[in-house]
Image 1 (cartoon, rainbow, N blue to C red):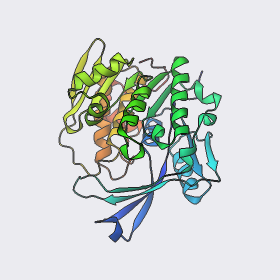
Image 2: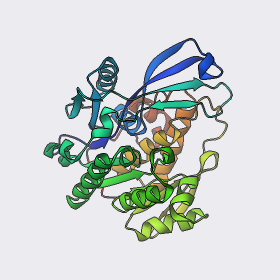
Image 3: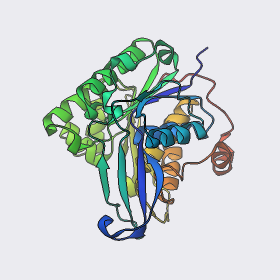
Length: 326
């Protein structure tokens, strides 16, 4: 039996968050947190009781130590995080927004330790994990990181593991839009569950309608496609069924960053527990709504007890003992 329920990989950055509103140049006080879509999902799954392995690199610096301590405190297994003496830990500045608008974010990640992930970073023990979650961020970091993402997803799929993929587009990290579209779709074709946002799906497929976007990825080999529609909810489609799940009503938005990561946590956790796709999307919408009601990228992600309290009628006490096959 595998030691891990889930393997996730990517870059976790240190984040300096403004304590005052206004332009970052004028802000005098910041506090330190972590940021990273891939690790947000890993943390969310860990809080729900899944055993999660984290694959990454950090610099041999104070920010790297801070990132590692934070991830380990969240229950992630970080034995396969390399400490890189030659390259720094990436970091970012994030503005404060009190009106629900997207915050200003400035990244300092070029040449970071995580951008030097490579196929050599893959330890055989990690391939025993039951499920792999991937995003389109890692392949945007560097050629070697892209090669690692493709190799890891290929080997996990060939081994019969389940795979989820969130495109999580970062156009500024790519040389061109055409390269981004080609490489992201090449990775998405390896996943069982594909989770684009509507705007992302339109860029990646050229289709406008959610049903057509979903059909594109089903034709590429996905078992299920779930399209995030923001405040409208989410649309899902498989070869045999399709449906729409409305968003959680009357949500007071505090910080929009991390909503899609919370959505992924809900969907993946429910499908690993063999829930129906409709139930999984309901949970995804709820955890996504939790994320936007808290300041911070992953601070609003719930514990298992909080999830159970919200979905008591759906027997949410079940853990991740069984393997999902998509």
